Image 1 (cartoon, rainbow, N blue to C red):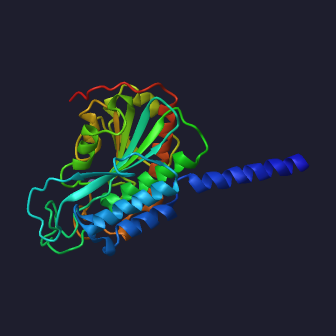
Image 2 (cartoon, rainbow, N blue to C red):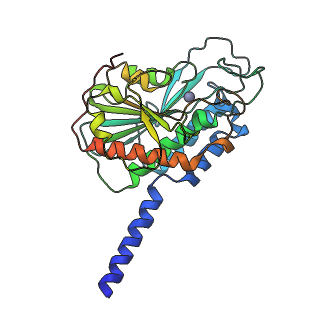
Image 3 (cartoon, rainbow, N blue to C red):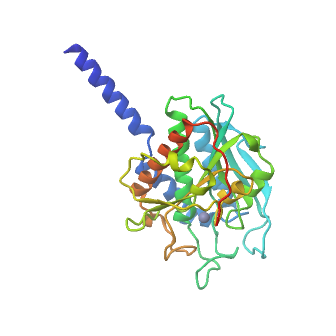
Length: 313
Ligand SMILES: [Zn+2]
């Protein structure tokens, strides 16, 4: 009887613990409500709100006790190049935010998501009729990805397991101006590129459509991915796509011959419009997507460093 009691207490504790660190729709909602709020004015590159968003990510990294691995603490500042004059925002100074989970391993897995968006509609690429002066909240694009990044960082830093790889968590700046943060990182890496096992990118993972499912790109970038994708347990519908580049920051890593994964729930009517709002994000579905990502990474951790392969057309 006593033993049974102890076992059940242990079981309960373990379950409560797992619940605490596995992706939580409540925490995802909290992150997206903050980053995608009108107060954040669309996190346009060079704006004060863009810097505030970076500060938010850095504070979360610090709470999780990740090591700062930028060039200025958690920050890796850089100057973005702009294609047109930005009226509202002054200097296009921005940064990547970089936190390191040091497991004392040789190789490192990079998990990333961009935190910038279109600001007040002055930096181009808005699909609104009159974008100027409108807050482009970017809740799906890409507060959803940043929330995912923070949940992945929480899971791997608080699971009390010393994985066979280190993890580098990066929130990229200036993605909307042409993948500038990720390009800046691969040209100025804070871990040697040859020690990067693979990179997993999340960009727009908040609009899960049960008919379409979540797309997972990069499947063709290593011959080991098909094996890693076997035996994934999930109710979330997903499909794979071979492409290693296209549309987001994983492309910068693929260009350096690093295997990648890219999580994306697809385009929608609010894409790059002021109506990409937090209340439209399905955070329960997002937590399901993150559970797939965790399983893929855990499967990959059982293997030696993945071999890169170029994707054939
Ligand atoms: Zn995006």
